[in-house]
Image (tube, rainbow, N blue to C red; front, side, top):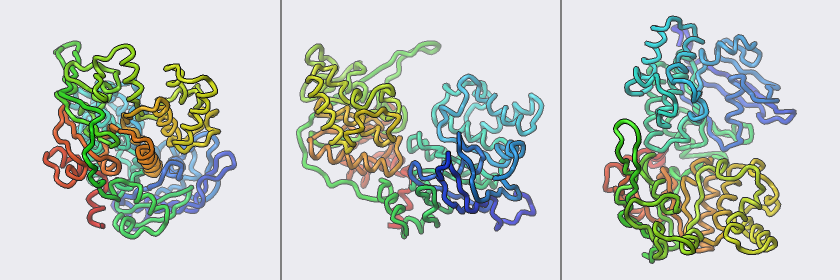
Amino acid sequence: MPLDADPTTPLLSVRDLRVAFGGREVLHGVDLDVRRGERVAIVGQSGSGKSTLIAAVLRLLPGAGAITGGSIRLGDLDVANADETAMRRVRGGRIGLVPQDPSTNLNPAMRVGAQIADTLRAGGVRGRAAIRQRVVALMTEAGIPEAERRADQYPHEFSGGMRQRILIAIALARQPELLIADEPTSALDVTVQRQILDHLQTLVDQHGTTLLFVTHDLGVAADRTDRVIVMLDGEIVEQGSPETILRDPQHEYTKRLIAAAPALSGLPPEPTDPGEPVLVVTDLVKEYRLRGRGAGTLRASDGVSFSVRRGTTTAVVGESGSGKTTVARILLGLEAPTSGTALVDGASIGTARGAERRAIRRRVQPVFQDPYGSLDPTSTIERIIDEPLRVFGIGDRAARTERVATLLDQVALPRSAAQLRPNELSGGQRQRVAIARALALEPEVLILDEAVSALDVLVQEQILALLDDLQDRLGLSYLFITHDLGVVRRIADDVVVMRRGKVVERGSVAEVFEAPQEQYTRDLLDAIPGRALAEQTA
């Protein structure tokens, strides 16, 4: 901040901002002030206008998008009317951006140090030695160990959390006045998310940077900012301190956001009566041979044992790399265990062959994380849903068409959706299609691998409610793979906590949440966004 800057004067001031795409207005007179040094969150579901507002501030509206009215001022600069030369100085110089997905926002063909160096050169830093020194300093400041060596590595050699730290280093390289963080941790598990947000907050505080935090997660916003702004349909409908918003929300939409956020509402489900197990896992081990220097074996699953009671939901939780997805792949028959057993109704998944294997695959069906990537974009919804029926030779064409219609009814999609393609549906609708496809063969067990982690909280709540309803009506059993203990509390009866391939704790959700036995479990619980503030304001 300049020494003579007035801290009460807004650094960013937006007045009556209107944005349209091809004649259709999507922002309707937005007013927003962000003071110097303030941390402000913009919260809302997908389509609420958050990202459009940010794109307008950066003058990066895509396609036919245009500012049609109002003003945007960054200090003394009229952003709405500035020429492109001025905006190039603003982007990265006065405003830094931490984008959402580090997988798509880093060049996979460039070393990470070179990508940070490009930002420095754009800011006028010259000299190979000076640039290299600054790159290493930025990476070290961002919490990347062995920065001197790792600056010469490529993005794929870093974890998701480390890639996000590199994006933070790039955003802060030119010491911007305003940092915009656009869903910077939505793809990360809760403990890595907390580490990244803790570090981002430390850096922002150290540099006196103003933070504008864009998220659909009200829990994250409540934990990390001084003021929360709620957007809906291109308008700001409510704003206030996190405590005020959580304790006394005024707008019906804000109340819905709070009710839909697992960490901010609700209690663990009542314990259910012990029932017979439909899925039993005993001493499951999966080892992978490593290649190259120091070759050996990686034990991704290390003596894992648990069971899923019929008609209930068991959640398997843990950080990335804990082994939970390896277990899911074995249960789906996509991987063979090194040792141990996995039984469905007494039938062994690992040793079944021929007709028995086909029968097991009918009983156990998957719902994957990404509704964008798990559906064939070239097929109609009808072809996607009836594919398992065709593979197993079930019914004729007319019978399969009727079955698809029934499945669409079950997941609350209109029958007319059968002739659409995935790109014509929303993310939540696509996940409903994935669930309908999984139900086509009338399975007993659904394995849901991070099935709601890519959805905003309102759509997430709709899918969780749908899963509850289907379980009640069809008697389904769920194995729910997730890193989100807030979701676990909302949907599960039992929970299995994994770390580094081992089960470290298991029990009913009520037992684990109310009296966790392991420090690792307590750490996971403490990392749930918004949990502490929700308990304070309850």
